[in-house]
Amino acid sequence: MNSELIHRTQTSKTPKPNDTLHQAPKPTNLLKKSKDPLLYTFIGIAIATFFFNFFDPVSKTPPLSQRQSESESESAQLQTRHVLFETTSSHSSHHDMHFNVGGKVPLGLKKKGLRILVTGGAGFVGSHLVDRLIERGDTVIVVDNFFTGRKDNLVQHFGSPRFELIRHDVVESILLEVDQIYHLACPASPVHYKYNPVKTIIFNFFDPVSKTPPLSQRQSESESESAQLQTRHVLFETTSSHSSHHDVHFNVGGKVPLGLKKKGLRILVTGGAGFVGSHLVDRLIERGDTVIVVDNFFTGRKDNLVQHFGSPRFELIRHDVVEPILLEVDQIYHLACPASPVHYKYNPVKTIKTNVVGTMNMLGLAKRVGARFLVTSTSEVYGDPLQHPQVENYWGNVNPIGVRSCYDEGKRTAETLTMDYHRGHGIEVRIARIFNTYGPRMCIDDGRVVSNFVAQALRKEPLTVYGDGKQTRSFQYVSDLVEGLIRLMEGDHVGPFNLGNPSEFTMLELAQVVQETIDPYAKIEFRPNTEDDPHKRKPDITKARELLGWHPTVSLRNGLPLMVKDFKQRIFADKKDRVGA
Image (cartoon, rainbow, N blue to C red; front, side):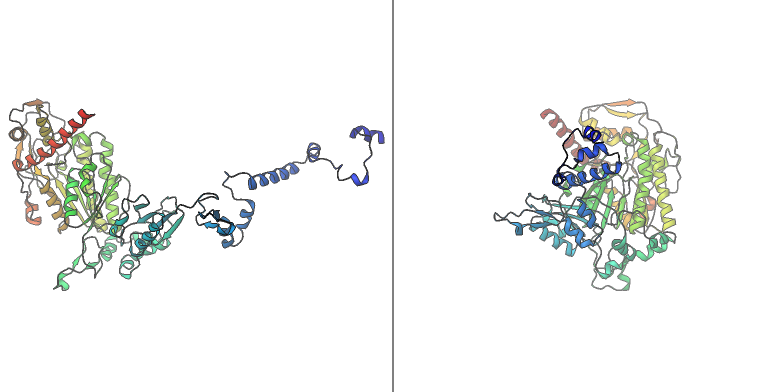
């Protein structure tokens, strides 16, 4: 038996009793001999725990001691999550260490300032808090929907690299990298939080991750929307010193409660970086309103609005209206859509989506905030008219499957949606049918006849006339149109209203006016007519004259030189830039 044992252990030496500990089998030998998988598992866990606790700085998994502490009280958990950083003092010691509040600055890195989010930071308290945080060297992001907050409260920080202002409603989720969050967003005065109690409670209890509205809101959506909106219209007092019950008017957007003086509306202009939209923005800013422009810059240009950059009453948002957006506004001018054949034929599916889905989104916003809504339709809804001149009750003669139908039928559908929201949900709406308009800031090569003729004459190119040149159009100057849009929005009538100049010109007559204005020797070149091009177009503006008190005041011969001046600057500036390059 002994010989067998000696043979198996490869030794003939008998171990001494006091050497038992030293002669114990090595762990590696045990592993080799053992066939129990549990032993391998436990040893692996022990090695991994030891390694990740002391050697792996990359792993984001908290140590075992921290994971165990998560089952304990929350205060104890937070204490273990505070990461130390070194102070800037040259005499730093263990007592000089401080807690990094957000756990973002690891041990060994000096503290340079926190990234702090302040919701409601454009309000009364929030703006003072922002001042203090900026003063001490922090980077501050302010999120505010400007229901009660004002940009004027933060204008002193505009341009600072440590300040950012985001228009956003906290009932919707947002992703930001910050160390601290001061959550102040909520109307705090009875006047404001009683104005829309459902919205107020959403501010306090709505889960921004969940897109499901609260039960009270879901139930209210099944009720009559018109009744809901009527309760949201709040009276405000006029500035007249002799105010009485009859001097009190409805606030168009229902945003200025009783007892607060009217100081200007908050107005959204979709497509506000375009030709017509930018002139409308100029007028609204000039009269004291706060304007938000939403544009995807397909045809719009920032150059059209550069004069308002830096103004606390102006904001420009790059956004496509086919996607919803949440804003607190009193009025919505919905102009967003490419209006020239060159542009709306470029992507016809996108054109009709802009007219249909974009209009639905803006009507939904108007419904949500109780804003008055104006949609800019077009004379194209009349198609190739069989009635001349065209009155508003004429239904038109439109080809529903032609190359222009994405625009023509899109605008007709936009009018339908607008009236359905008005009848079904009680939204205050206005419909304008715009006829041919010209003026500064038009796209130079957009295919519209006035811009084509002016650009060609300035470039010493032949004036291109399609067909026989006997087609007729009426041309209104852009300032006349803007006046009509504002009167329509501020008036009491839904429409639709024709907004155009009833002075009628053939294409040949227009070419002659351009020759007289720019180059008497400009040649005229005839080309085949385009598909579905209307033969006649002239508005009957009797309704606008009688109900809006509006009529155009700028003749073609007076307005065209103003447009030519703008085109000269842009065309020849482009040439200089190309030569310099």
